[in-house]
Length: 298
Image 1: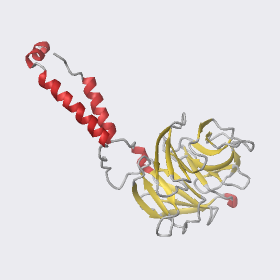
Image 2 (image 1 turned 45 degrees about the horizontal axis):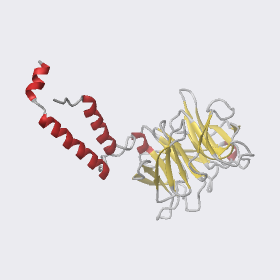
Image 3 (image 1 turned 135 degrees about the horizontal axis):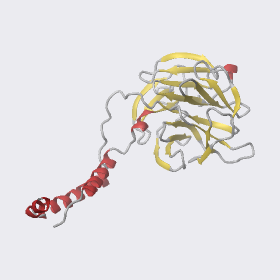
Image 4 (image 1 turned 120 degrees about the vertical axis):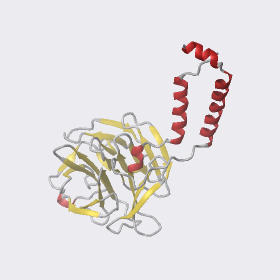
């Protein structure tokens, strides 16, 4: 008699669960700026970063057009920070992710050009990190009102996008210095102005949007690709092709979705694997000898 182990049943359950629930919950809270949608007015898109499926869209408050590609976006639980560097390079909109409405606005000090935003917070302070300045450095500001700028934050050069949405880690798509020819994704110390504290390879040299949800770094490029990346080793966990270029990305990890997410259909390979395993399992149970099992238990 063969005894079917609990471990094998658990493995089977995990296998079918992987096929049914392949998207991490955090990936549902990713946002992108789409300046080129069919309405002619730029929109804020909430999407599943692993599949590209959209959950909802909101019209942005500043008349974003297809030619406005210098956008910055950052998020934290119940709010999104948005800036359109092609319309007003100093004005930050704080948006409600539940309906896209503007909660408040403020200007960053000095009116420096911005095309990327990152957000960081702890119990006592919150900061915005920006890139896009003409001297190709990063800046840090108070996230409450845009005051207290620190210029030349970190030592990276020509940063194009910033990620930092869950309050914990800051990343930037940049060159190491002015002599570098390759863009990488650098981890930036949010509190101490010093050289980068880490780096990972970038999946593309044309990144236009970054986000970080506490689990993955998300990177969108000008070829409409959206990558999900391990922040510690740079491995590509997932990639999906969108029908628009995500010129800015953010995450609002912790914001409730408008309705429960329904599991997607099991892929054909998953159905075949699950069905084949279940037939073997039924056959083994059927051919097992119940008296021997009861005797072994007794």
